[in-house]
Amino acid sequence: MTTNINKLRTLYDMQVHTAKKVDTLLSNHLPFGYTKVIKERALSKGLLLKTQRVREVKSLLQKDLQILNLLIEFAQENQAVAEAGEKKLKSLLEN
Image (tube, rainbow, N blue to C red; front, top):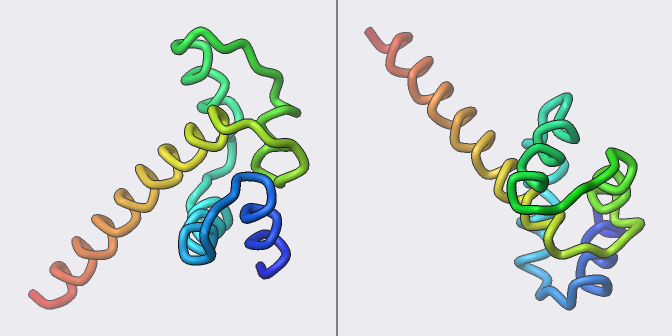
């Protein structure tokens, strides 16, 4: 985790708290098959990507701010879905 935070800070000139948030999102909220979704979203924006490129950006081996932004957006969406599911489960268990 610390290594990823340092890589994010170096590659994208992020502050520590921002790098921590991005690392958490990328580590915990990207589902299986995320590369296909990212490729489709990139294509809709006029970017043609290879799956390997998406993985390299996610793994912080390559720098590409556009791909990183797509990854963060998708991870935030998945985080929101997960949090909504947890809320629903709690409300069901309370009744």
